[in-house]
Image (cartoon, rainbow, N blue to C red; front, top):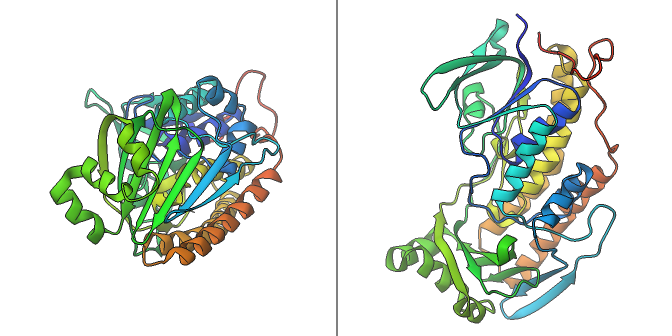
Length: 404
């Protein structure tokens, strides 16, 4: 049977929309499905690291973030108790500064870029199951729209980009390669009137916090610790009171008291990190669906943009089901794991919150080293993905059909 789609991407936020865009730019017929509304908000620390900014630049999308008023971050300050260590962000090719776009902006820009590239992007559609073929290979998805109607979407490859609690990972039985034990309970909120002088990371025994300038003059403030630290405060003070109690003793406290909260403060329960198998017969995972790390890493979006590129490259190289695609997806998994496992190990120790102040300094140096390996790999990649071909260049203006 020939499917209508070469690839169905389940999830249309950072990981999914990026993957759909890259595959569509390479000439594949791509369907991208997301259950939420286009550009809807989601809890996020927002902060992009160098590798994430580099990816947006490589794809021609960084200017859209800048034009939308996303502030440039040229300074990062680390507070260990009351001791401040400030670092300047040195410009490098493709990375003039760091940025932390609102998800209402970033997710919409990526989804629009996927559509502009030729992908069909549908919001408000829920994937409820998988289609299976010979040998239990995944051959597509079953969807339910807002009208309640079910529809089948056959495809040569299904990519799960549907987040930490991925249906695709669960339905395929993706094996867990790494399972963490530590998790941070985190409170998030937005404030107006906080000085927007770069990223600020704050650490004191048992508590981590941060302030991240984003769009519209807002600063995302988060704070967290182990469940046994946060839970008693939540019961007594609620989310906003808990965030303030965690932040107030540190250098951010006076500025936060003088600023104006915008919207509600949200509490996110901690979930330990995991690394799932990256791919199997007819399926692959990208973003949090395959690789979830504690939000204290502030690296979720950057890793999603990275892995969207790594996965897209192997799919374009081997778009048809068969031994070549199996080998290519396995190679993607090995590279993703090589980049991700060292970071997971460090973030697990950060999230444990059993460190002292000299200890957290050492952990952050280890974390920075893993980020260096990541950006060096991305900088070495060719600028563009080649077109995906099936034995000859497709007619002008028409993508190749690779599903079979």
